[in-house]
Length: 80
Image (cartoon, rainbow, N blue to C red; front, side, top):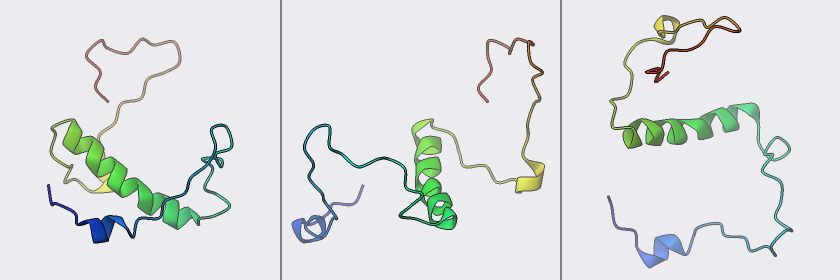
């Protein structure tokens, strides 16, 4: 982990709200769909790291998947 200086932290965009008066989590009025998709990369990368698994290297068209029909129970070891 890289240490961050107080100067760098002072540039963080911080907003303060009273409890219960926070803005909505809906970003659709303030961001474009492309910006919201781009935000997901950092979250996805962090999730893979937290899970202790390597990032996938396959192309999108080759993503492995399983179709579960409605009413069909999933296996107990399903990590998908």
